[in-house]
Image (tube, rainbow, N blue to C red):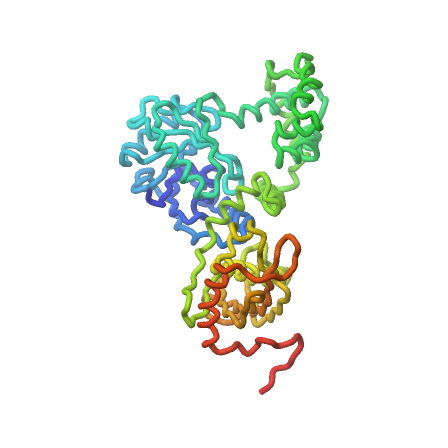
Length: 489
């Protein structure tokens, strides 16, 4: 599939899709006849560029090219994927599909961002209904990973699998909804909360801010990591979900909820909701609210990422696909080029430079790459052995700034069956200057006891030719240098 995405409809969702594709290396073409499309989409992409890279510690792919097209024909020409995000009117969507499919080849898949229509409704009257399906994201599309994929009986299994793989490549989590239903899954759940909230405001039980406080200060924090059913399982204590249902199930028969009834959206109710909403958050512009939302989401997602939990586990899995392969040829007198990284927004300190602890992270990642190269992989670690870093000495030679591409070169200084002495150099890719160096001594240990022990035979067989070849290289001048030692002429 050509990595060209056509975005038809440039509102908040279309702009979010454009950002998600663009920052994952796809070329993007946007079509929307609205006169402010370029500004609106550009502002969404600016938000995405500020937020999405902060979720990853590996460099994002090289950003694609963005083009705003004057016609739908220009946007969809040669596109590998078309994402429709036009207004939620069935006739408008049908007209868009006719135009799209008149100017694309058979097999060009079209995903709809619809939050409510079933795919069979979208496919009515289409030239190639089998190429249309629902791909419903969540705002902001560039940060929230879930996308609801809803096919109909007309879509092929192969086509659906192709879309799943495409979405995973964008860092998204495709949820395949195998039975089409109005509003899919997420919006049906949101609709339930929305209906109850409208009644609470209408009946003066709570204001819009009080309802939002209940969510963001209460169960919303739990839902971000556990969802609904797992939260209730925990609430059931040691007896689990059966106990919870047995205790609270009878409440479902009590007249707590008004889900079967909807308040009339009178002018008075609309004015009440709008005025309360303005009082709640009207001091900030929409762009300021978006940036605040994104900053908070990045913090929550990174916290989950550090614990490899919920959406954070997915981020770690996607980040692993972004890591470059480990290079290095055994038995050659060449430095090992083990790591290529980019200075991300989250790596910057108050001086505008790469912050100190990120240097240690980069050198630790280079050491990890070396260990993988010599066979210290997950299987080896599961066997109960590893290398622990006993000493590190980092020298800062230059400043690294936001967006700079950096690479490491590594030389093995000395090694035996229990020790691995290495020297890393961090270079700026653009001009080749030395940014920092790190000398490290690692000890091979029994992971259970922490005691130093000989490395395995396979590791030593991989390490020996590298160490022998590197002894032919000049010994780096800073090796063995102690902290504060002055250079001599």
